[in-house]
Image (cartoon, helix red, strand yellow):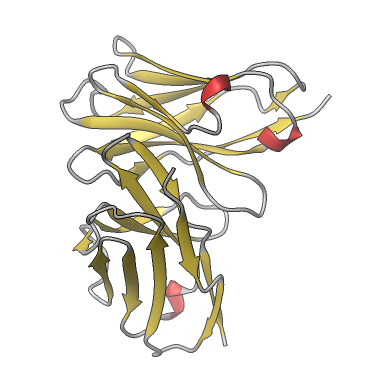
Length: 119
Length: 109
């Protein structure tokens, strides 16, 4: 199983950041998996952003919830992240990851994609 | 929200040392605790899940313990490949959310 993030590397302040994670080597519709987004600002630690369950249920970091939407397109084996009203504080390396319900730990990660918020 | 406090933030050790990293949750999380290793420029790698279960392919010198609010990652004999940053991560089963600790950088002494 491989995950690959894609999306613009540069987003202007106040605009919406949109990223897609493509799953290959397996199906995103498999029972009992979460699919999530995690970010890491330069030189800092990891922050969970949001996850979506295979059934479509969504879960958000309370500190970001008002600006985040996660969705899934099972026909394309993709899930996506939208983060609105971005500021420089949203500049980070964004990872997508799989986390099985039975473990609730991220066992497969994408390579990450860097997003810079700047005018 | 459940907060995770990881300590120490930096640890200096030598090859062959026994290393212990601690993670404390602000409230009980049962055994929903994972540990990751991250090297510069790389995605995190899962080491331990459900507090003490070793991920497939991870060397047995890594072990995890704890439950409730106090958890420990132990490296029994530090190897050159182990110098990295380690993160704990909790799962709140009651209101599904995931939170990472601040990280512990293991440096060469």
